[in-house]
Length: 118
Image 1 (cartoon, rainbow, N blue to C red):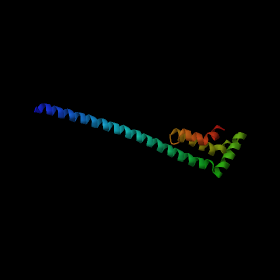
Image 2 (cartoon, rainbow, N blue to C red):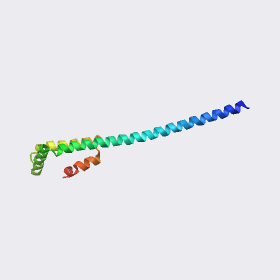
Image 3 (cartoon, rainbow, N blue to C red):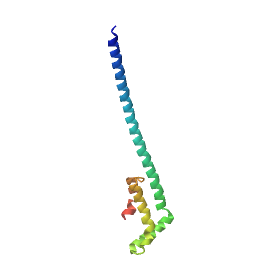
Image 4 (tube, one colour):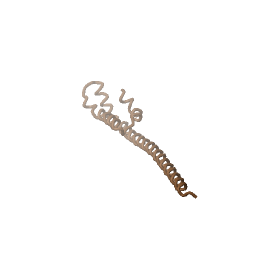
């Protein structure tokens, strides 16, 4: 038996096994990255929805409804604009949370568009 030929075949088989292992590792890493990105996106959306619910709760609370009424009256009269400050600050905070990416645009639109647009 020719030992050089056997050594060559064994070396080639080892190289192919190394290439296969490398390919499998790369494939697994890509799949793990896709799963991580999906999980991260879902987590961010969940946090955004929870934040929107809390903001909506505050926005629709009895105390803030009174504040909104006073602000709307002041804006309609176009005087006493400082009375609208709390509501405008709230909406500005919603905008900031959107710009920072803490609040998803679609979620914010769903919860607050009607009020911001009017």
